[in-house]
Amino acid sequence: MTEFGFIEQIAARFAALPANGFEGIGDDCAVLPIGNREALLFTTDLLTEGVHFLRAATSARELGRKSLAVNLSDVAAMGGRPVATLLSLSLPADTTDDWAAEFMEGYRELSERFGTALVGGDTTRSESGIVVNVTAIGRAETSHIKRRSDARAGDTIFVSGELGASGAGLADLLAGRCDTPLAAIHRNPQPQVAEGLWLGTRPEVHAMMDLSDGLASDIRHILERSYCGAELDTERIPVAAGADLRLAACGGEDYKLLFTADTAAAERLAADFRNRFGVPLYPIGRITDGAELVWRQNGRPIELDWHGFSHFY
Ligand code: ADP
Ligand code: MG
Picture 1 (cartoon, rainbow, N blue to C red):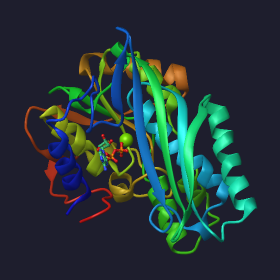
Picture 2: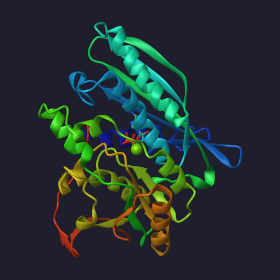
Picture 3: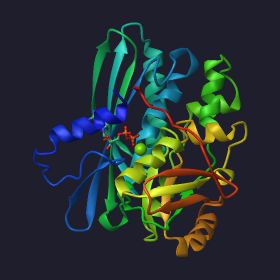
């Protein structure tokens, strides 16, 4: 069973039940229109010890920040503003008061930085490792919401930052090198909340999502939901210092934004983005009317069986 096969089964099993006004499973957030111009966004992510983090290789404060950051990234990926979160914690009996206080301080720091309220959650004892579950709630103007399903043939594909640093940092951590700059990047993801909101206001931006599992996997979600194909130019993928192309394409947890935009407006968009944020957008390919993902190197197709992260195979 694959992670995404299982999610498809879940969606099919529940397809006939009433949606009660929600747009449900399949995007970075579920969407509930409220009034005629606004919508609420809902997303949740689970972090489990041993799978998402190693207790010895991350500080409690970093884990508190990261638990929130990965959820804020999903709200940003829809073009929304995160407004509130719910936090559930399952803690083993040996968790110290200090660890818990540090975790909450990290969570509070990032909540303050992005202006989100903590409005609820649950706290239990765990018989195995630490489990953290965060639900984030966002708001967006309905006309600003960006879905995975809106890519159009001819669109330019962009990423909003360099890729691979987090994957390289994870490799450092797994090799026991916990104090490298790349390992710090892996433990401290920066959700692109302002960037997502800004891109949401731009009508030439069509489909958008955040990069959590790795470009090679995540682009496929846009292609599947938009019924289209893509060509990716490997030489244009921005590789972060300390990473390599394979890590940039297949490593997870960079939390940059992946989006498609009308090619006629793409240069203007990138120039405006640079004026606003002081950094470039990276065009890495095009949406096609095919159904395939084609990797290219200097204009020629190349065979690459590249995939990002999946929880089950
Ligand atoms: P993301 O990486 O953006 O958090 P995922 O890849 O985890 O998204 O999930 C893909 C889609 O499947 C999302 O819309 C998510 O809400 C949904 N999903 C994942 N797991 C479940 C589940 N157990 N039950 C219902 N929906 C799920
Ligand atoms: Mg996402």
